[in-house]
Length: 507
Image 1 (cartoon, rainbow, N blue to C red):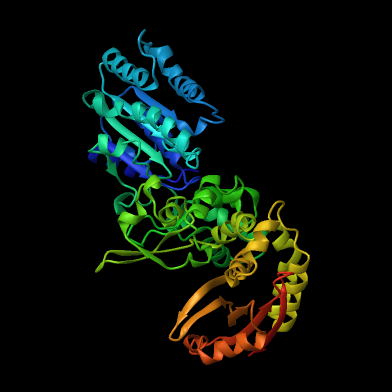
Image 2: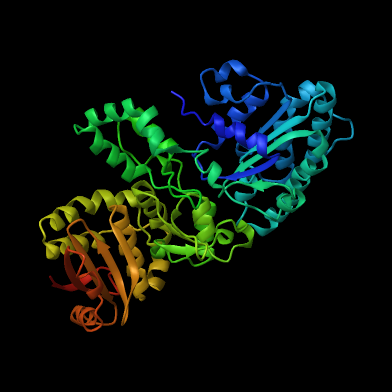
């Protein structure tokens, strides 16, 4: 089965020469680059029956240099970096040769392009996958970052000098890194990351899912003993929700997770099997990012595309890495609204951040507490649910080395907001902290299918005082017309044990 994007590939290479595309990991960038390589090599037989056959007439055979920088791993020095770049060039140098005085990665790439151009008597295509992976690995280390940056800058600037010998140049990555000066050196580099003409070039649209993958939905629905429509909605809730332009008509599914679900016959959280990127955790800490405010963030397209090393907030990085996506666009003021895409990302986001922010392991939260808490809420027994939370938090197996951070943080009500937010996110419950009301901000609001819970938490006060604050300041008033039950909960946390000590409930 092949979801056909070849018409977009044809349009892209006909309109532009230097192209940059940013997409989150596991979104099919590598498949896209291999498709481009096969097209430019003139492998016509591979495209039989696909859309590009009705568009392309010439099928010329160009020399292609295709480099995947995600294969560069475990570097400990500049010598390691240079050696691994040389390793990537070696297969092409075996075919086209290497110059005696080409001693740097950039010089060898430049010589390789020149020899391929003259030997084949055809312009060269250069495709670089995950161009930013080398620097993302050392983003936290200023000394290494600067040293590696100089090497990569010399490597990429060759592409501008070789303009007359190039037919097409395509770069992919997760983030936009301007320090390498590639975006200024290649002043004709077209960034199509937010271009609505190509917003579905990676990923699977809902239309593609319900046509190309219709039989897979059938098979999975039988596994879950539900009808086709129900399974489609379950897949949509878990893996859909991405938008990569201001045009919101294309609903994009994470292709890796979607296909993994079909392969394993299970709705799992596959995107996070390789873990949350460590550079993302470091940047969230660096900017002291309030992780409980990741819903309905308003920003501009400039902020979304802001270079990683010039960030003043973690929001662009969260978007570029796929933890946030475009959910709305106001054309009049040119403002994008960003939110978490779907259930899988909400759960995985919380799982990856629990150790860093709350000192908990995600699997302990799900296994030790979720079932009992959900059962209590289904029975409309909020008191029992809070008792389950108290019992669970009293026995939390905190991450090793986290005790000092707990001591420092647990005197702040914000710590409990973070902890509860992440716990509810692990349960795939929509929760927000510091929700604005006319007379202030509610500590936390939780939306359930049949009820809305308004929480106020106290460290230096009583549960009764917390509930009184909800009533006096009208924290629950905005939700009274929703149609669901509104439940107000005042909670007192014990500073020493870090667990809910007491609570009062107004239903």
